[in-house]
Image (cartoon, rainbow, N blue to C red; front, side):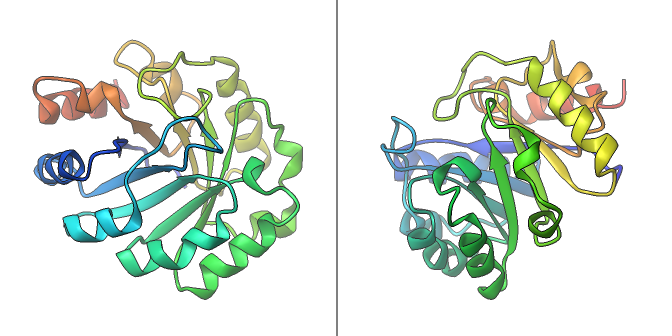
Length: 215
């Protein structure tokens, strides 16, 4: 898989703000990531599946669950309309295959996120065969504007050498000044938050980031 795209990532704890952000992104993107946090797996909290459903997203979207015990969230996000649900390996390493099984049983594509300190050796061939994407965190998750961890790029490059056909994504700390270096790893999806949503012209920021993928 060689296609590369920028994916706007919405992170907020305010339902009205989420709806406004969703309406704005619909004018320039056809796929978004919705970041979900529980205040336990990460310190911050976010909106709920009900809030996402109420917003009536007109783009395709994935739920990135930064939560403890992700299984209890899966049905709600499938019902809210998520086309893909990404769970964190670190949230339940002993039962991650259960989460993946539930996601696929719900008719939703499954993804797995790895925190910066987690090695790719945790990804068995059997587990990978059931995933649609692997999301590499380039920050410690939970906040917009966290510091980018450049060693993540080496991990992505190694993973892509071993599994060149697997869809890969990166999330956290990607800006105008490093997106070219990020794209050079061959990563397929580059999730961006503040680099789009903290800008005065979100559509222009998205277009400029997208152009840099192929500069």
